[in-house]
Length: 479
Ligand code: SF4
Figure 1 (tube, rainbow, N blue to C red):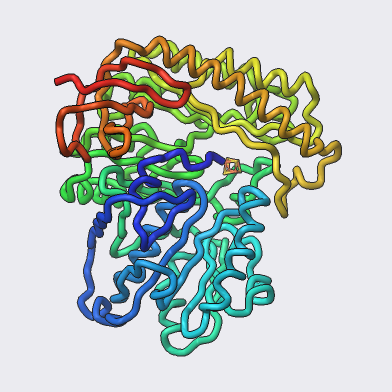
Figure 2: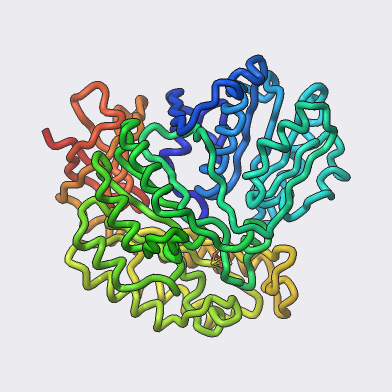
């Protein structure tokens, strides 16, 4: 799955909700209270929590919702792990290294576990389950994301003196809704519309860690969007492992495209993004909606994973190279230029030089604006782990470098063509040392620019591009 590529989250991460890779910035918290409960808000007035998060946007947003569970119980957000009464490690298991890191991190917390509740949540919690208690006996809460709806009960049990609680239920039709979502990013709000996944890609742990696909009722999504607009947000990013397979479970029975159009029509919302799309559920109507709805951002992240139809079959991705390219042709035929990014895995078991070469040539065939490339990493409970013909690590690394190098060249060429163009940028960062502001265009390009103005954070400005780099653009504000 796609790695988080959202620099705004990194640059605006709070000390009380550390996101890795870490960064720091202004301390701004927005908590939207849907249904405050005065009794529960005074429940644990002197206690505090700290959440450390690894992984994708889904994990980042889960942390915001889990924080809401604690805020609703009267906890406050601690500034450091040391001062927190409850410390939660929100884990990712998409790659082997991320999983190894969890236990070394838990080991580092051992010395300060006394008197605290230490919890492991997220994908690795689901994957390792009870074994976490064996390997790190100072942990007292283990909860996978499909069981987050039970968190309030689990926390209540620990508050009442319980020693260990565990939530590993995958058999659910429910989604995780909270009274309060404590959003760390003051500019872009994540909104989950679908959880889990019903695909069975042979390399992926997500169906085993996040459970089956389940969509939120459209009215719940829309009322959250309206509340966000009232709270001052202008940009919303709709989230799901396979966001475009959304199916409204309510009587309205909206499809993904209809939901997109309705969220984009919410007064005050200027930008709507969505991630991650599965190519199988990517239909021409999505392009038509973007073409005709200015608030829908002109960017599509469409993970291909491999350029070889043979490897796509082994990955169980349910489409071929040609079918993927046909979908790209719809995007290229749009009236609005739409940027396209993707994920690629190199070194999948049995990937020959020819298969790999097809991934490299696909980069040219599509002309991506960004590629998140990874070496294949075998994961527990996946079919691919049992496949023969593993590619040696050194060869995987070589292929990754070749692919990244080619993509870098493509991005230089594409970005050079943008010199002289003007983009609307939502400003999310100030680089004081470089005397530059930075933000994203609707097409998700990073634009660094100079301006005579003093405070532009959160503003929409027009920036003219004067120079291109492979991963960003440089320009000046149009006054
Ligand atoms: S679509 Fe495939 S890669 Fe994406 S979450 Fe589902 S199983 Fe994993």
